[in-house]
Length: 308
Image (cartoon, rainbow, N blue to C red; front, top):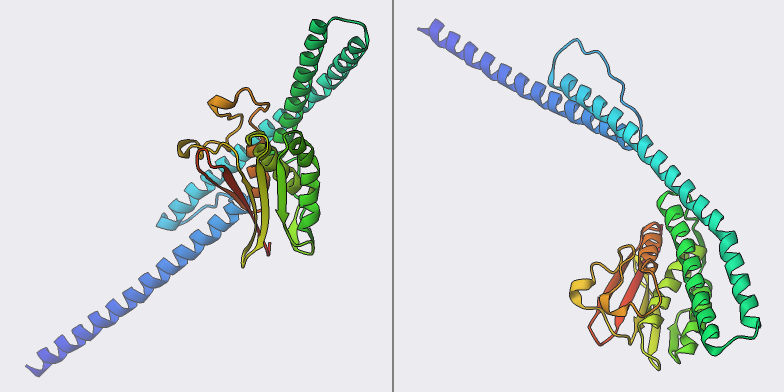
């Protein structure tokens, strides 16, 4: 009887030890599998190609690794195709821009010569309209070139720590001229010694596009308010106008390319300013928010990281 009890005890201990060993073995296998999977994903994330390796054992990791290697191959080749397409698009837009510069310059020159010649009031009106359309075409081509260069990565954001006031002043310099023609006042609140790590040129372009948008859609005699706030993580630039406002259902689409609200087609523009602005700010790890009420104006808030 004692021998039976001893045998049962030894068997129980053996089963328990085997269960403990099996548990730790399984735990180690799961840890190793997770670690190998994480390493493979990290290499793929860095753009490294996973080489197909022969596995003696037809285990779970062997099957998974082979699938990841195939996915890595497809991912890299797809990226190469996209890069080639972007390069082709960039060259196409550059060629179009280059080929149209001379004809546009000649058209402008001939229009200036025609304007100096004696002609009737009706002819002068036609010349004025032709000049406006030529300027619009030139602006469209320049915007297309900027879009192409930004989207294909030709233009690299180069950030440096510099006074935000200088960047804002450059944007204001171009916007003030347009605002004065409509008797729109611009009020600015910004510390002149506020430093921020940002790309001066392209951030200025984004801010000008937002200011230009505010001037266009604000009635003569209106106001634009600019306020810069230094917060814990971000520096925010608020641009508030007293314009017509944006209906809630359209606020999600105003940043898309070539979007223009149906009732403003009489106002000059091609619908790329806000798209470019968001693209530029996003490339600096920032973002743009919009708050607007129809008939009560709009507030665009540009947020750029303080430590980036």
